[in-house]
Picture 1 (tube, rainbow, N blue to C red):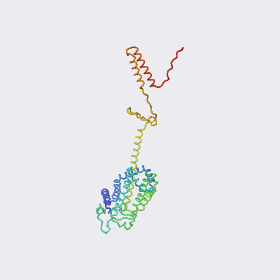
Picture 2: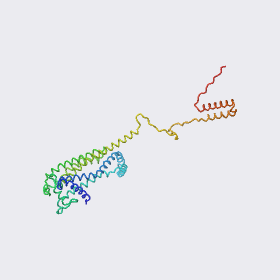
Picture 3: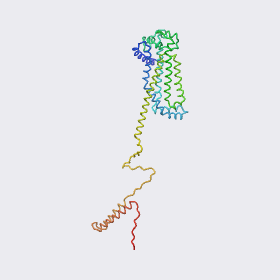
Picture 4: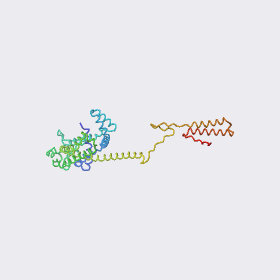
Amino acid sequence: MLNFIYYPVSFILWVWHKAFGYVFGESSGIAWALAVVFLVFTLRAILYKPFVGQVRSMRKMQEFQPEIAKLRKKYANDKQKQAEEMQKLQKEHGVNPVAGCLPVLVQVPVFIGLFHVLREFGPVLPNGAPRTENYYFDTSGVQSFNDANLFGAKLGAWVSQGDAVLRALPGGGTTVTNMLIVMIPLMIAAGIFTHITARHSVARQTAAQGENPQTAIMNKLMLYVFPIGVVVGAPFLPLAVLLYWVSNNLWTLGQQYVVYRRIAVEESTKHEQVAASRQALAPRPGQKPVRPEPSAEEPNPKTPGAKPVTRKSTGPATNGASNGSAQAAANGDGSSPNGAAKSANGTAGESARGARSSGPSRPPARRTRKRR
């Protein structure tokens, strides 16, 4: 039913076993152990980009966490409306929560597929017939796995099978003691690395996320329950699955270090560029801001509340000068001395009167009185 999972897992395992079997030998336990480890590395390399997307999505969600808190408070009694508004907010910020869960969702089927493929390496079928294939592995591959051992322990066996069953395994069998010698260090390492990985994830959460009751419960499960579950469940798992678990956590630790450091450098560079652009646009210390002067074609904009300014016309001066010229022309010929004098006097008088009317008001000059 789950052949779409079992065949890809067995194919990747088969490729790496062929590669390391060429170096260490087909029936070498080291070749099979490295094949399991690099099965994990291949899967995690494929999921590298989704993991980076998950980290970026988490960072974006931390940026608009206050808006999420407002929505939860506003629609506390209407869960449906709250979910709709949350989806709108996530869409506006370009956050896809499903993409963040993709790396974890893909690893679960692979874990199940590896567990099933390892169990199917048994030399005998359930009906008692000898096993001739195991998905991508042929008869020689099945026999190679059953003959291999890692420091005296069988990769496809588990401690809870009992000493009698372990001794009867093909390829010379093994004992509970040999299984425990290899299993206990792997079991402890799996529990420790699971706890460290969870602690790194929890340390990067914001204070608002930590105060959420659901998040707090999930953090406790990741920090304590999951590591203890790995240690307690180790005797019921094949030895190769423990190898898978340890190598998966090691990859996760290294990947988190690289990805978070890279994103931190990108964000710091972005903040520095924004600060540099602001500093370039800002005026220098002590420098007055330069305001653009209005063009000659456009009038100056009126300031709200300013009083209207009335401009004084220069019409009377022009009228006076023209009247003086006309009067001079009417009184006599312009070529006669009297006419020229009168014209000049009239023009000067009218110009003076026009200047007094158009210019600022001055007090009249006092006339000198003649002494009697």
